[in-house]
Image (tube, rainbow, N blue to C red; front, side, top):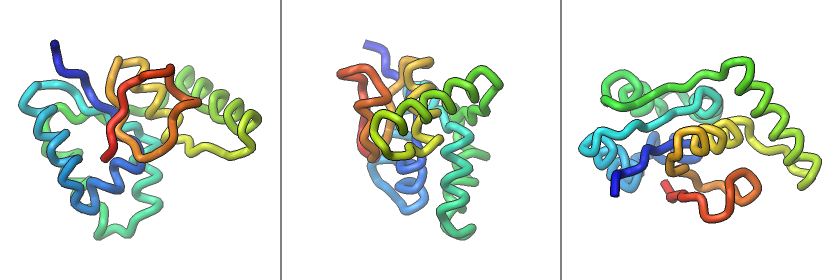
Length: 134
């Protein structure tokens, strides 16, 4: 069975910046298997907002030097999907989801990828979708 690509959400990027061994293992496995690791731009933005500049040094090194890392921006169609999905979830649950998490779930489905997250995603992904803890 071929290894699946990964999508890292904001919680995974926080964990990486704080030295998560599990994330290091996932990134090593992805590089050795030549699979992509997708970093949604909204998750990168949230991480830079949430953490001090010095804390994000590992993230800047990761995005500049590790092969297979794909930073994914939002085009107008994806922006409409992410915004609409977030609004629908907020109306359904009464909680405002992080836009980065919605983009990450969308990318996981688009690329048939494992979503690496500490967040609850049952309302964002089909039942049984592969996820991993960072």
